[in-house]
View 1 (cartoon, rainbow, N blue to C red):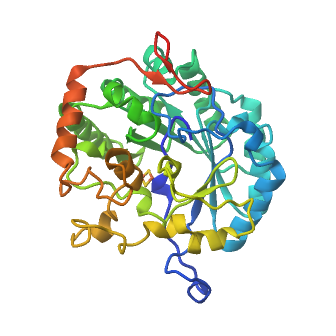
View 2: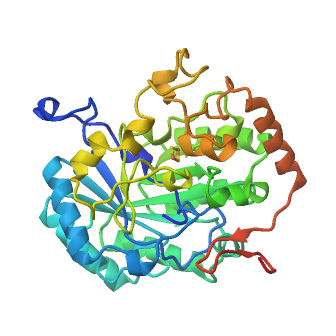
View 3: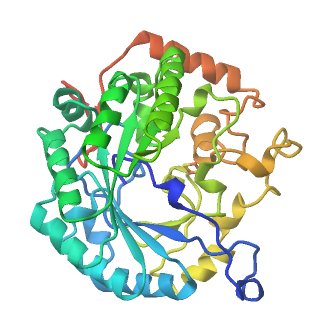
Amino acid sequence: MTDQSPPVADFQLVTRAGDEAAQSTTYGIPLAVLAELTHRCPLQCPYCSNPLELEASSKEMTTAEWCKVMDELAEIGVLQIHFSGGEPTVRKDLTELVRHATEVGLYSNLITSAVMLSKARLQDLADAGLAHVQISVQGAEQGLADRVGGFKNGHAKKLEAARWTREVGLPLTINAVMHRQNLHQLPQIIDMAVELDAERLEVANVQYYGWALKNREALIPSFAQLEETNRIVAEAQDRLSGVLDIDYVIPDYYALRPKQCMGGWGRQFFNISPAGKVLPCHAAESITGMEFDSVRGNKSIRWIWDNSEAFNQYRGTGWMPEPCKSCEFKEVDFGGCRCQAFALTGSAGNTDPACAKSSLHAQLFMRAATEAAEEHDRFIYRNFSGGSVEGGEF
Ligand code: FES
């Protein structure tokens, strides 16, 4: 997904009756799966969460291949599919894929930038059984939002699509990706989500790996901004209880404990890339040297989940080094984020430096505070031509 974070809050660990005997591990198949239909995207967000190496459209799975994948997902007990990207609406067969998901009993959610949607297409998707729409926003007003997304008139299109979503009767989540340059608009974004009749708002601070790491200087908030954001979110959660659910993801550079990323590696989540790779998290390909099995190979998805090296490498707690190994929180945060550990230390097997118990944490905190104070605001945009610096060459 290019300009938003995954709907982690939706994922839960489920183990069904009878699974125990069939499984070679103690992990039940996740309730929900993220299907990245394409890495193509009209936006150029500086925090794009697609891997640094994008999969070309010529490598994307065909309609028939995705339908076969959905048959298998339904068969092994997955209940929800999140269609994402890149931008999933660039796929001309999206309605067909949604219809197939409905036919095999999968609840489908569309995670979209919404700039390519029309009301007629939303109606077709609703008629095909789409159950939910999640639209990302880059700010509360057009100038800033269009600048962040690198797409002219994108904000106006998103608002229009959000209204159409409700008019065709679909529930709506607004996903607001937050950083130093748009946090001041958070109160207006909250008002906007209420005005658009969204049922949920995700206030998701940028996480710094992959492309976002290239833009950390331009995006990292100050500690004071984070404190103010915590206050705004807590007040809004209280005031809007019963009107708007607000999920909140902080930038964990300033936290004491790391986030429980993906609910723990290989515990609650997997996603399938446009070319069919089965990944433990959407950013897993940023960990160089790790090999991933594909649905195009001869192994079943169930086998890959239970047995593949990539899933088992950081599953559970057995892989942990100190201080994680003897930490009382090791089964709470599962050692934090493997992708962040790799990005910041060069090894995914190290303690996530976002944890205060890491010897690198104080340094990380200081670096974040320093970068935020320096106010280098120019973005390096993400695009298929390898990236471009805002207002100049790359
Ligand atoms: Fe990959 Fe956190 S994003 S484990």
